Length: 314
Image (tube, rainbow, N blue to C red; front, side, top):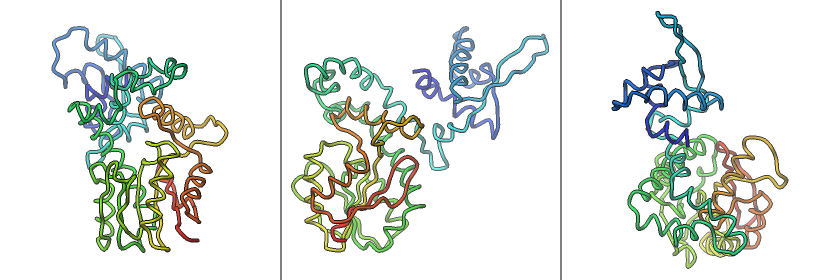
């Protein structure tokens, strides 16, 4: 919640605007914010101390002319993801979404969900996150901004590392949300004819294409639904066709590294908000086989995401 507050106050962006390697005092930061609260500087300093203890900020001290000492704060390496890149995207929007009251309230229902059934978000709000977004403009904007930012950042890395679009002439972007991924793919590969395919229609049919791309679609659904839309993908593809999927892997056996921790955090978040899940590599491979796909391989990584190919025929 401290990080959420600092992001909402635009503190990280204020430090970044001061220039590479800049370190600012709470007084200098608060000078950029509209407040008359005499306690604001002290309150902010206490928040920034906590973030520095988690290596989100880099602290130092400066001696003042009157002999007092004030703390200065700079951006640690992780802030390259929490501040806007040259195109205006960052993970700050996803952080705000995950710490939004609509999400945090659901966590208070996990125990009852385990004992009595129904997933926590539904117990908390009486509806799914998707239905909630449809009826709440504020939450919808927050959700969509987060999805666009994450998709843009991950897609940049995919397009730098993955070469599997080079032989594709027609591509369906399944579960495309705002169409961010498809527009970026076509921008790099203008020869591709792209089609977006969104919503429940996926469980009825999928447009025919050489390849079908999906990012963070599997993790929204249980195995039964995943196999159903993958069978529709299988039907839509020619024999040489493939599904290109970008998802997070959780380890088969629990691990203690940062990548694994992030995957487990995503997995529990999906359990709480969508009654869905992240999966292991073997579980993804099994879903493909259950839908009829003969081949499976992990093509590359994009940050903590993996790019998989499900091949209709080996």
